[in-house]
Image (cartoon, rainbow, N blue to C red; front, side, top):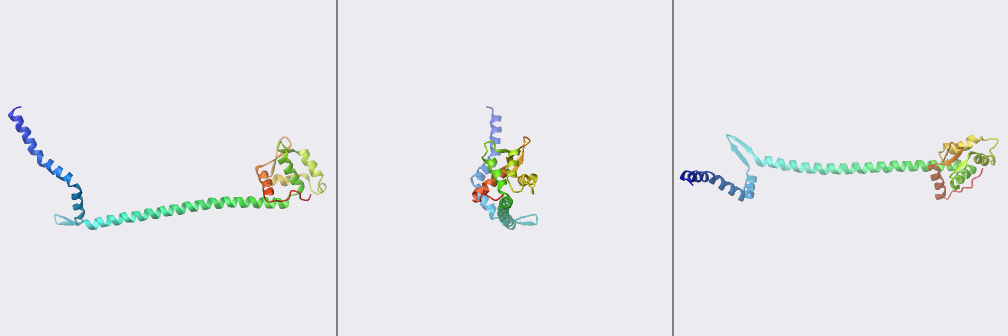
Length: 194
């Protein structure tokens, strides 16, 4: 190596040595420097003074306010979720009460012969009854001369307990099955008059 090259390397090391030493010291004393900076209350430059402690205090207060707001928001979201659950339960309960009211009213108004039709459909293997057999059950009632068949069977259709098929048969609806279950659970008699 030439003398000139050695001199260039030596000058380069001399030039970068002090910033390198400062950097190493800074890295070694990083936590102490940070603590020292946190203790600085005021900075003055060119006749302008900035009070850092007030700003730090405001930042700390803002963080505390944000934490409180976040807790409040979480609390209100929790309340909102509970209200939504209550609404859903109330809606379901309302539907159940309406259904039970419908069944109670239907049971009070239904004739024994109409109940016979429902139980016959329920017990039959095909889960349906022919229109002719329904008319035969109707003809065995005391209503034959005064209460038309259309009104007799119409009560079951309008109550949505049965539906009419195109093949001249009637079948139980889901509501019809539930109605019979309602009667069974509540120990209501199936042998009503007429």
